[in-house]
Amino acid sequence: MFLNELKAGERAVVRSVGGEGALRQHFLDMGVIPGAEITLVKFAPMGDPIEFRIHEYELTLRVDDAKQIGIEKLPKWESDQHPVVKIPHEPTDHPGLGEGGRYHVREGEHPLPDDQLLTFALAGNQNCGKTTLFNQLTGSNQHVGNFPGVTVDQKSGSIRGHENTKITDLPGIYSMSPYTDEEIVSREFILREQPTGIINIVDATNIERNLYLMLQLIELDRPMVLALNMMDELTGNGGSVDINAMESLLGIPIVPISAAKGEGIEELVAHALHVAHYQEKPGRMDFCDAESHRGAVHRCLHGIMHLIEDHAKEARIPVRFAATKIVEGDSRIIEALMLDQNEMEMIEHIICQMEKERGLDRSAAIADMRFSFIGKLVDRTFHKAHESRQHERSRRIDKVLTGKYTAIPAFIAIMSLVFYLTFNVIGAGLQDLLAAGIGLLQDQVDAAMTAASVNEAMHSLVIDGIFQGVGTVLSFLPIIVTLFFFLSLLEDTGYMARIAFVMDKWLRRIGLSGRSIVPLLIGFGCSVPA
Image 1 (cartoon, rainbow, N blue to C red):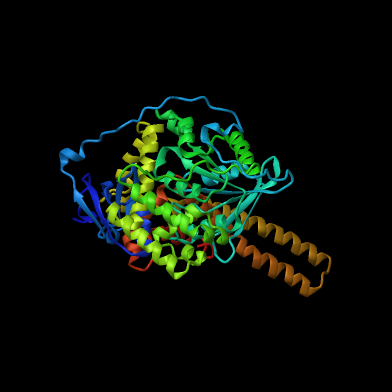
Image 2: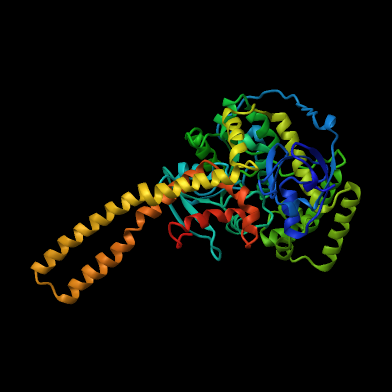
């Protein structure tokens, strides 16, 4: 069978992953790997795309993509069983700042000078609270531009109370494999700019999805702090985390925070400044299981690391990161290492032997190694929360907003209300008020300039040019602002993501994706920002 052949609620095991190049790598990075269990949650109202649940998080794929993933359907009796194995651990004391024993940190050769600028990269998945944390860290001390060469937003600023710092908010990404411009920008920034520290923000309520990026960031061998966000939601719904055990297993400091409430921010800043100043690098970068059947991956990576160590050092690429990217077939990293033909042939032999022993292709073996470690880490350190009231309420609302027969009527009703309020009530009222204000000011200026016998050309420039020209354009401002206000509400409540899910099939017929619905709607207010 293929993944698109499942019905809602049915469960299966992934047996093969098709696709080519970056698309296939993207499947693997999202957790679609042979052996993983996957459940079909629901189809979009138009039958495309499809929402699945895998590794304890939701994933949406189009039907064409799902057709490339081979599965074996699980019997109902088997799919209803969910054995959860908890690995016992002993709680440990939590040492203070600078006492890195709990995470076996590797100290740098020398502390940085006190007056050196400390630069940080803020990295994380989309929708994990990264922008909220960035605003908490920088306040108003930030500026916005573009990364060089691409139209991808770059926000940077200094940490409040610490002028000799600079933190850059990297685009929200899921992996350090180059699938989108955002992922390329984030990886190149960390590799080329080499910030003195990395702050990785992780959604504690969606831990399995977020930790995949974290393992790749650790491989970059830069001083790093993990900010475990939304801890208030996790604990409020009965969940908990053994921070000490998690620090010990990962080899980096971890700070529980709530970015929305501003909790834990000071401790996070203190740890970030400390590891950056003393260049304390992660105490662990090897997440292979050398003892199990995955030992083939361990031997493969370490063999390649010994072979390319001098090349990686010359190219200023962390050797562990370079080795995993070579196995994944990352052309950018392979080109940067400038390996000769004999070395490439030897590496290929090593990888082929690993594939033979492991029973998986090279890219799938690397993804499986990471997700296997994440699974063990979560089993040992996390006590899952029960479903929150908010999530339960969201599911009930989704039955209407993304239901087969109710999604489109709900969309029409909601957008009709937004447009009515924008163009007939709030926006129109503000527009009339602004136009009246501009008209009153124009009459007063006109009378004053006439009384003062101002030059006729200057008089025409001010009245006909500025007031009637610019004033007319300004009168559209209330419409645009009002529409943006309502669209931002829909965005913040998550409704826009659901509309993208609903509209994707229709918009693809004209070469767009479901996410294009947002600029299309903005175009009703003004085509320039659209």
